[in-house]
Image (tube, rainbow, N blue to C red; front, side, top):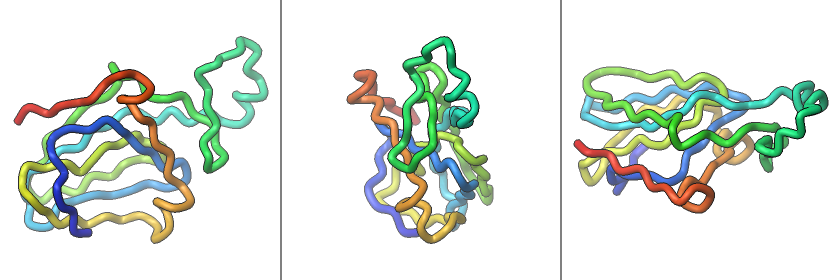
Length: 134
């Protein structure tokens, strides 16, 4: 995939509840990826939630999850010929980079971003924008 204008900041983070995803840059240039651990909640946990956990949200895709905490986000600098595998449900923001454009390998199903794409907006929900210092 050819990506343009992805500066070193983000305020949204996404996960895919049903599939893994793999990312790698063509040419091995430096790029960044923000991540947070998966927070998908199994249906039986929702039914058995006697504690009234009001943090559990239902995605428009149908599954349940707990939004990622600001403190849980980590940013990784990736360089060279590396391919990253994101497990099912891993929150991710990026790829982000300093160059005007970059090309990436992106292994996921052809319709993943249509049928399995849940986004949390840190700016709207938490008043936070993440800035990456290079």
